[in-house]
Image 1 (cartoon, rainbow, N blue to C red):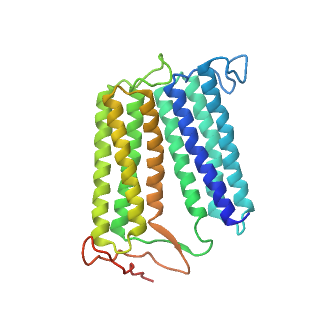
Image 2 (cartoon, rainbow, N blue to C red):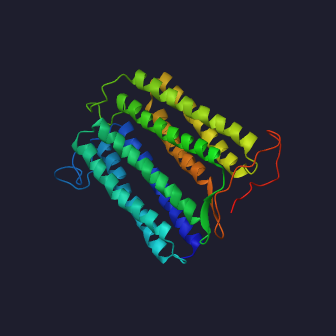
Image 3 (cartoon, one colour):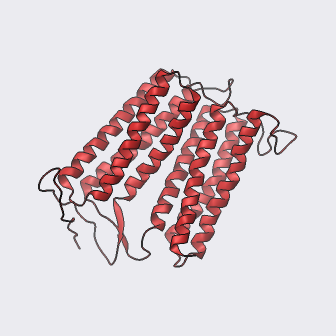
Amino acid sequence: MSPATYRKVCIAALVSVCVIVLTGASVRLTGSGLGCKDWPNCNDSRFVDVSTTHGAIEQVNRLFTGVVMVAVVAAVLGAIRRRPRRRDLTRLAVVIAFGVPMQGLVGAIVVLTDLNPFANQQHFLLSMVLVALATVLVGRSGEPDSGQRVSIVGEHTTKYVKALTGLSALAIVSGTFVTGSGPHAGDEKAKRFDVAISSMARIHSITVLITVGVAILLFRHLRTHVADRKVLENALTTWMVIAVAQAAIGYTQYFSGVPAVLVGIHVAFATVLWLATVQLQLTTRAVRAGVGAELTDAAAPDPGSPVASAPVAST
């Protein structure tokens, strides 16, 4: 398999692990969490049962796991058949392939515990881990096959990006507590977190505002301290656009009574935002031929002015 073909396989795997987040959200938002009350069978008499709407929705989500498994196994087999073969790609693909059945087991726990909010939370967060790993796999599959992966930004820029990544993860985690405290638990009788949704929404909102604030500081840092900033700045711009749209959707859904449609859109944007966050992290490193050390930031002579010079590499 050629590197170009394998990258397409990796993209298909990434798309599949993102789509199943949305199918899982549809189960919860339609109240179909207990449409199938058993696992792996739908119920005590049938493996597949689509006789009810809730059952059909839950069944589609379960069956789509098979599609995801095919996609990630294809990524593993592709990594083995790829020429030249690379261990980093094989390891990543294997971890993702192992994560998908683990996600299925967490889903079983969700059903068998009658949609316990902690189990539901872990189900979504594990999906975010798989999205992150699949994003890294796609990024790595597009890199040159020889050379050394080194930092292409300085220490201060790296710290800013790491802080933004950590805060983005924290915002997603706090968002799961808001969902677990809200009306869309997957079933009317399902247990919720014993905390007011308004309180969790405030905590989540503060986390998001701090995260956006760090992104703004990173923008300023890039403009004033980094000469060769185009790739990182473009990735950060994409992140900011998605984050602002996500925040707008979040406030709209909260003040409009948390309608299911907006919650579904919010989940979709959360997934895309996390993908963009991982992609931003990936832009801080690149493969360089030969043996090199980490590159350092070059100070821009005039904030905001175009700079043609590149960062200076130390060897």
